[in-house]
Length: 526
Image (cartoon, rainbow, N blue to C red; front, side, top):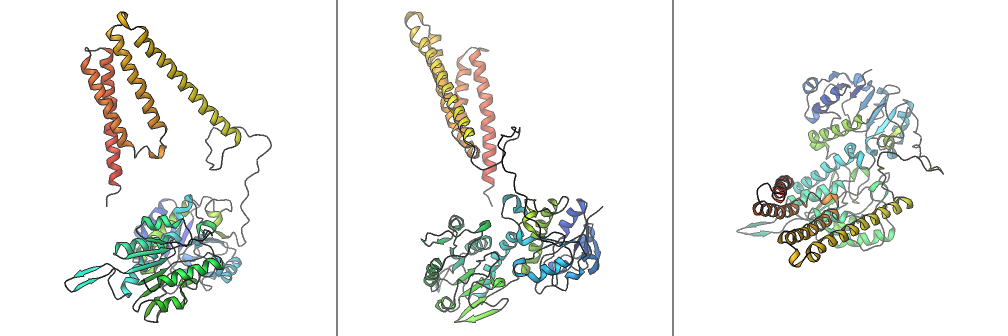
């Protein structure tokens, strides 16, 4: 039986996005879904009904979209929309259940299965479905554009015959996805960028984008569950306020992005900070939809205070609706690829996203079985666990390492003995020039094998490709040695043939090394 996906038109104020774009609709039809789009649902994002029809979707009335098996939306439905959802159907959209208790209660009455796009787990396998990050990247970029449009000076330094102007100084509070996107855009526009985050791990990311990281030397970690920031202690907040008070007179633009999941946005930029800013400065509060990081912010309004412009937009992603809709649609496409028989509390991605399962709160995921007293039978597949190996495994690995060292030591002693016998025991009148030459070449061979083995064995596999150019140099030495051996010996002599073989193998390595190196270098070209 074909599963029908319904895409209703978004009716919330300022919401221009659509859940599915024609490109993704075509992909979903190819996967066996039936796509039913409410007429005009994509028009505000720049996608006409005809494009959806060409992609294989059907255009239906509003009731037809809401009566589908799975309803896909961007924003959470209004209480007036909930009755349109078919009993027992599935709803996939942003829900924010912590602040929408009445909405969750209404969906419970519809016996709905609700998958929240705002609860995608912060894990590697779930990144492809992470709509919050997709939208945050756009919001951070757009925040800088809005600030640049509102401030009465150029972002980059200017030099004219009449004089020069300094660059705009930008302070970004919160170095998450939105903050990092804002840093990159502000730097690209020529501004001097400073950033602050309670998570010390963000320092390297800020610096990698060319920003200056403002750090408090305070023994308290700012990382919360899932990699988000957490509410800090009063002592830390006091130090934070002192830092911001020192920055307020110096910066021209402040962009705040700090959010704590399930709680009101932390108050970071107080009225006193605004008063300390230079006239003409701008504050862009990206946390306005959760109360705001700035004390004077009003959601979706422009506030003028002490000569400072304070923006509290909640629709920055919708202001770039075509791109935002495309990214969100691809997040949904990846999510539906994981759908299988439907959402399950035990699913690595869908489980944490479940708000309701058939109208009830889903049960907790089934815990992994406890290890039995008897060791389980060995599996032929390698374990993917990142936990520390058991003591007996450590001992086994250590034993293997010791065994390899003994084998190398024994082999070295044998080879040294052979060389000594050929070089000295057969010396004098009994030794021929050929044997002496062979002993010398054997010495070079032993040293080459030892050095080559150590060079490659002691390098982590992740670094093998960057070292390709270095291995080209080693191959070049082999190439010269092969040419030398091939030229100095008689035709079809064993050493001449080995020299030719060395030439062929070294050339393969050199050619492949240059090819891989050039491909890597092209990755860094714009």
